[in-house]
Image 1: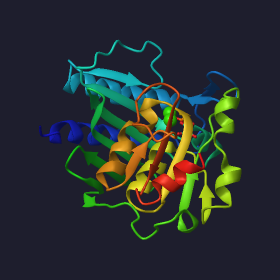
Image 2: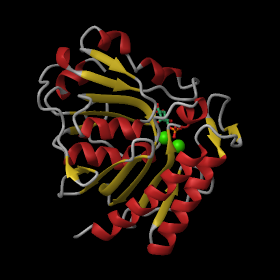
Image 3: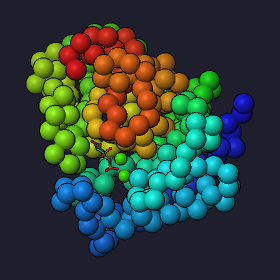
Image 4: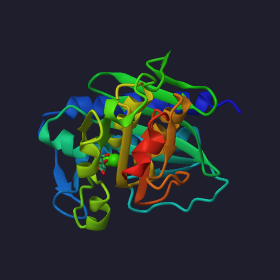
Length: 261
Ligand code: IPD
Ligand code: CA
Ligand code: CA
């Protein structure tokens, strides 16, 4: 199947949503929180999601759309085309004025990700992938980092959940064990963009616990299409479900990384 129309629609909407994010950056937008005071949300998250949802609904009225800020999650069947939308990934960065955020849109069916876009509105970098067709940055093919073959050579990235009551899962971040075994470790604050960075070889590997399907749908496809490997932190197939864990890498360091997670 050709996913061009799906991808093109998602890219158009991600670029428009990115403009909303760029235009509001550093401005006086409404802000609040969701599950706890560190779980931030802004009117910009909601505006971006509304634009993307309306655009997808108009283009594909039969498809299911699951957006982070939509409280009434629709029913989804295994056979339906399902869009996972993170309208602003990296809200904490956005609120604190750090220009490292993204828009992430991924299309899935029957537990497979078919197409995805991750857009960085500040650097105007648009990462795309569709199943079987490779991964691209602003239209140019990208590849995972094939230079680093061991953990000690690797630049890794992880992230922390906004809600610290996930303490058991927080403990599994295990950065104390990893930091001594890799070249260095980052936590950049946008899981979708971090996955895109693994796909294009800027980072060697990524892991995180307590993510949601909209954080990883697009980015996980990107890593695989760029020649990398994606599993959960126990090495099983990644399943797009709430509070998932993920490990993504250039493939070469994957087994070594999993040993310490
Ligand atoms: C968050 C970011 C962050 C990750 C958090 C996510 P949000 O998403 O992806 O990097 O560490 O776990 O919740 O809330 O900014 O869309
Ligand atoms: Ca997110
Ligand atoms: Ca978000």
